[in-house]
Length: 477
Image (tube, rainbow, N blue to C red; front, side, top):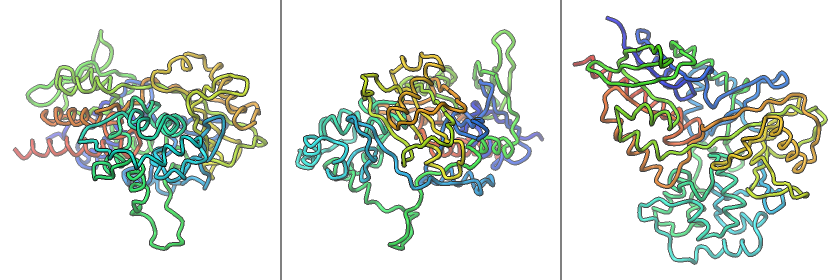
């Protein structure tokens, strides 16, 4: 007997992690095919050569407080490459000043007025201090816009100077359009438990013990982020090896249809498509592609995916001469609407000072600027040359660094960042409920339960276990 035939649609980190897990679950006999529309694997993981250094121009780190990514790195024998940031805090540029990103906040929502005193005006601090005296806050099971709720309770400055820059860095989105339950689930949970105010909810989250922390009172706190010394692209290479999948690049999936014994999938050019007959399918693709592929087989899920909008952004990576002196911080977030001294608006929404953030980088000095928020297309219409010029001007304004780069890479991420709007958790529940009714099909990816790498790996594992269980049940009958 031949082994099961598995198709993974999407060759990003989610699809490759699913292929790896399927190989573990199904063994050597399974035929696992990964079909990727573009000409490269990795999705939002991309490591390039920048002045001779392996440098990430997509995702550049992952949360280690969630176990999924660390566990995967360990499982595929890359744990010796795991590194953590140096002790360099991030900053935020708001109100024409650059200040340390305040501690004692949850995605910018303060646990106390003192926590945000350096970032906000005295009037805004006073408003924050008075928030617990407002009528008790009760979500009553509903979702709400982050920006709308925070503006009503804490005022505009908290949103514009703190929350919006942070959410812009994670989602390339805006607080007014993102939902509380999906973007700040811990805060929403504290409110559901009866915290009654945003400050008390944030204080509850901030004070919650980290299960990884040492019991010694003098011990340093555990690291928050990690990455791989040789770039996150090394994980992509390793997952290809461990999955032993048949990789098919540059082939769009044109149609997905069920039949009595599994799935029939058309891939390739419309005039001469190739047909694959497989037993199970994992879809690990962005929301627009998932919507199109599910339209015939799971129309309810396809309709739900239409509610997940996407944003675009660009990364400008620069290698600077060793003489360049970056600030003593890991980077800077920029509030929207900030201006240069000459009245020129900033183009970048954030800078990562990689050579400060990661000790394993030596020379040259590495820095990357991020450009683009949801609904902001004008900046991304500029040519690569114009983007580099604008980002260099922003860096000079913020840091005084004007050195000409030794090497530059501009990488554009079109439509790849899902927006977790109001009601996103209900949308995802509808997608997963509808897909669960279709045997041999699973969905995974950043459009579901989180845009970070651990969340993507978690959805990959869940999808792999779902289709593997279906195959096991089919064989047993």
